[in-house]
Amino acid sequence: MMNIPYPPQRQLSVGEVLDLTFRIYRATVAKCLLFAGLGVIAGQLASIYTLARGRPLMGTMGATTTWQELLVQFRDPGFWGLYLVGNLLVALFYSAILLRQRALIGAGAAGGEFAAALHRLPALIGLALLLLAGSMVLWVPLVLTVVSVSAWGALLTFAGLLALSYGLVAVSCAWTILLVDGAGPAASVVRSWRLTAGSFWRLSVIYTVALIILGVLYMVVVAIAGFIAGLLGRGDFAIATASAEVLVVALGAIAIPFYSALALAVLGDLKVRKEGADLERRISSATA
Image (cartoon, rainbow, N blue to C red; front, side, top):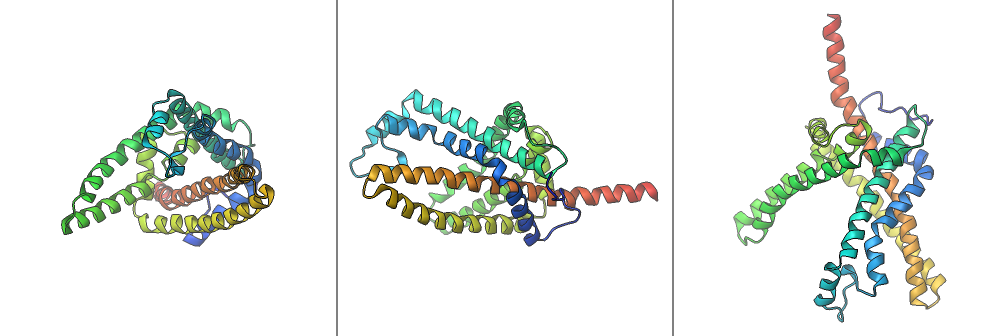
């Protein structure tokens, strides 16, 4: 058990939320690396299958790559099967990371997180479909306004982006609530919306700072990975590429527990801010 009070005993500032994130991350990252590495590999199953068939990846289209070659890939049921399986495994492994971190900083012992995540898989799929449907409600009008070249179109595009950003922040705790508190998909979204109400700008600052930190770390590690891959490859492009891919997997395994640690820190602070105040009012009214 780690000596990290959770949920925190008082409301936290932006800096303190980030500090709690780093404390959870440092205390748990070593015991989450296996799940994180497997999750990164699972996310690449469809790409590995594509490369094994000698086909180009969408992100590596070159001058010699034709759209016909890409259409062959998209018509391949094997590609879509591995894409679906890979994403389901990613959801399971990432959920297991969050559950393990919660167990390690709490009173419980770590173990059985993957089985617990597997038990919650139907709820995770339901949450994903619910969020997808909600985002489509905002994305469709946004796309329609983008194609409108006018002052009103620009204004509506800005309003649409703002509404989409608000919605993303409002439901940002739904996944954590579903796993930590065992709520259903709809209940998780509703509770996330209630907990984040009034904290849009504050949460936006927290998420932005966290992304900047990870972005800087990513650029530094990628530069180092490229240098090491060049040394190992010694002019052999295939070896250099394989070495770089291994290092990218390692980077992802190190970075992913940071996201889940941030999710736990944010949820813990929001619970104290919203539900802690409600509890104090109930106690005061009961003793009055």
